[in-house]
Length: 131
Image (tube, rainbow, N blue to C red):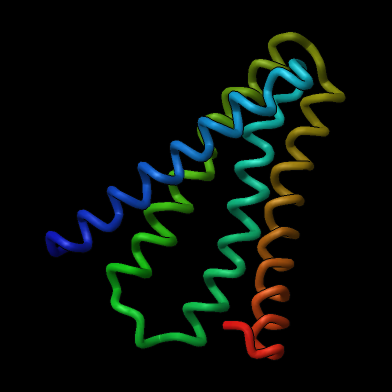
């Protein structure tokens, strides 16, 4: 991996992590049982990944550093499986089984659905001549 790819991933990852942190600060106090910041980060990340997948498919000439900054960097920093896992285990340890099931379903099904929605949104934008 070259220096510019390394730098692109690092800048993207820092930006994504800062956004995730901000979402946690903004949303987690709203409903303490269910950490909405992590859920929002993963759902937003899924949607943006879908958009990025479609956009990058249609714009194959973009430099690899840009592709890495967006996907591996920014979206990798924004989304978080480890925090999702920790929050899920916390709910299990509190014996809040319905909330545990709900958070698992919201993250997993929600993220996949949002990725598909992101692909569809980018296709619609492309058809409309926006991208």
